[in-house]
Image (cartoon, rainbow, N blue to C red; front, side, top):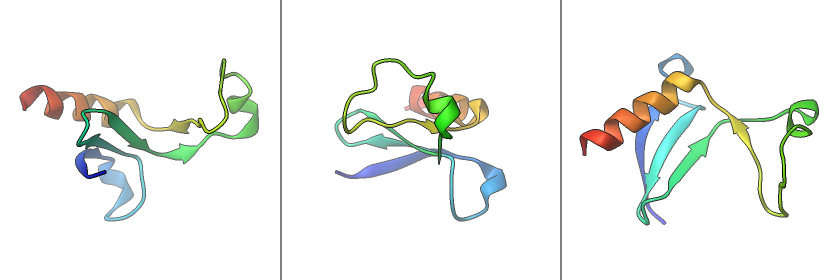
Length: 70
């Protein structure tokens, strides 16, 4: 699946995360830091194969603005 980068945390330099991508099927892919066990314990109904990451709200907002501009 091809990914098109929508937004990246400018403080992360040229590498790392967080980053938000638009997948060719129209879904959103989020790259971020994995949650620690205590935080992950607060998630509800996590199924096998699912996970969660942490990103800055500003990166998500930037991604949504770029997506809306398309």
